[in-house]
Image (cartoon, rainbow, N blue to C red; front, side, top):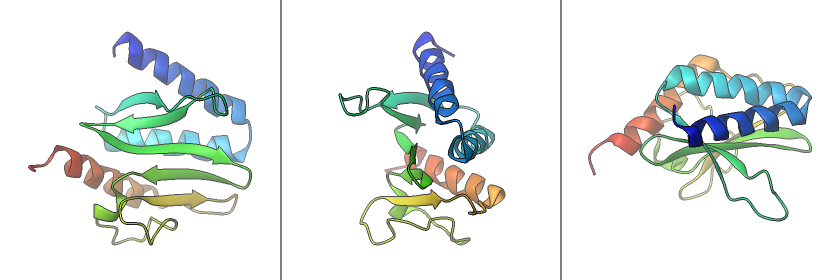
Length: 132
């Protein structure tokens, strides 16, 4: 792991720890699933700005796969090319009408199907690394 990725991973650790409630626990779980799905995933921080100086935790493999963050009432995982991915298990539950993105909104009571998420993430990697 290069220094930039180590720095980004440490920042993501701090972001998750700073959330400090069930949303952070959900994001830590999702992060573990991402690494289970793709051990070669690269963690980065994107889109720093004055209103969000920590930036957005981003997961890449030959391009962006997904981002995640915590909001007042949910934790959210957004796949940039989610509309192009098969989702036979209905993991996506937000941004379903968009042309590109799809998201997973996790409330306190939401139950994420871990195996289905891993398969969805692997499909996103294949989408990024495939021909074309």
